[in-house]
Length: 226
Image (tube, rainbow, N blue to C red):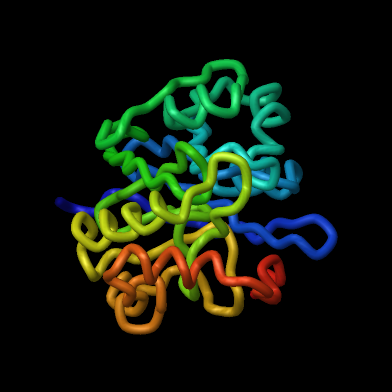
């Protein structure tokens, strides 16, 4: 499938918490989506304007505050459609205007750019990754260096293991990974790099994965960088 989109990475944050939001532009229609809009409304809206695009879509990987806190402000300025997994909406009672519940493997479109929705619970009850031709937006499911924590409400190391196995089965190794946070590696590494360097992709036994993911005294879990 021919690539018909461009990606713009936005580094946003509050205090010591650093997030990445991503703008996806359909190059044919100039319609745009943003993945996990957070923290910096002025930067997001200025980027939309500078790029000369029509913001139509908000893609939410999950409902944690640092991934959704600019949804309502954006909705006041643009009439955008919001997409989040039905499971995430139901479990956390997430609400906003123009909210569209999505199911596993459902396809949505930004202009002519197809986005496939992969349900990947583990960090939250209904986390979702968004797959394009050669890009995967993973939120807090998968980072370049690791995977999301599984001990908050709705989290599950068992489901995280299955979600990572699903990504390994479903996603081409050349697809580039764009997570919600970084521990030092720049977003955009190919999946092949994670398969060789991310320990959570190397563990093939569920019991070993759970034991390692839930080990005690982990440090720097929220020391996001880059």
